Amino acid sequence: MRAIIIFVIITLSFAACKNTEKTEQENTVKIPVIVSKSIEKDYTPDLSFSGTAFANKEANLGTAVPGKVEKIYFDEGQKVKKGDLLVELSSELYMQALIERNALKKDFDRVSRLREKGSLSEQDYDHIKAKYDASVAKTEMMKKNTEIRAPFPGIVVDHIVKEGENYFFAPYLKPGYSMTSGIIKLMQLDVLNVEIDINEKDLSKVYKGQKANVIFDAYPDKVYQGELITIDPILSTLSRTAKGQIRINNSGLVIKPGMYAKVLIELQKITAIFVTNEAIYRQPGTGNDYIFIVEGNSVTKIPVKRLYTVEELVAVDGIKPNETIVVAGKNKLRDGMEVEIKEK
Image 1 (cartoon, rainbow, N blue to C red):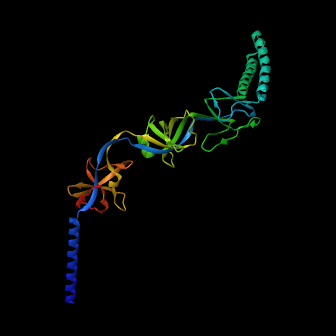
Image 2 (image 1 turned 90 degrees about the vertical axis):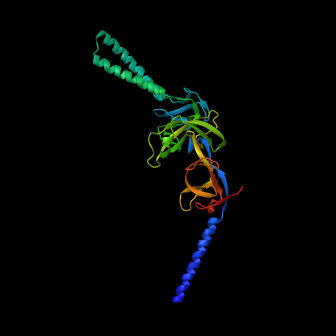
Image 3 (image 1 turned 30 degrees about the vertical axis):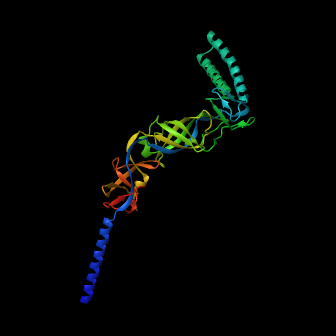
């Protein structure tokens, strides 16, 4: 029994010596690494959003009373100016109101003469005058409802009701656009608004008047300059975002409502320390990032925080400019290990 105990003790001692020897060898072996320098530079960060183009103005134009569409003066796709006559409707109701007004006008003229002679009471006069005034107002309304004029310059994009059809007030909807009743749809397309959703954590970084670059998937090589014109005062309770609108010029009518866009809003210029993306070591199983800095012949493991990424460079917080940092060979390193710098 004593012999067995002695054997175990000798075996453990031998193993401990081997481990100590191995550790000492690891500490004396220099790990080959490739390095670069951290640099300080100015940078203008931006916020990226997905957006959708909408007309600056849109309206489904109709009338307050139903009627037959007699004439549509502009085809779909045609430009119109403010005030242009777009649609004429049947005038039967207007003519009826006009006949009633003319009849009441005679009654009103007659009671006016009687009132001047003192042959009519004020009450009877006021009664006839009220009926006549109401008839005049009704006639004016009916006249306005026999025609539709453009409330703003734009393009006719849809005939909701065709010539010869009867117009009734009925909801009309194209997904993503206005929902209302109408005869003709008009849009202002030479100026567009690109709508974005701004996350609540980014609201403190954006403001009205801020410049933005807009790139549409349909034209990836063209950058449109825009301006943030509105930010909704309330957030969606579901997405925790506020709607924002970027206004862009579309004088060539190249961009169409509904197109998808990438929006970049520039923030204030900052000065930051940048390293190559290869220099950042993320500890397995965590979200912690580190950089190995070479000091003399050994390395120091420094925790860093990513700020922004610009192509192959990453702005980080936690190191100084002109530090010698490991970009290759870092996976074999531990804090305090000796290294041998190799050329790329």
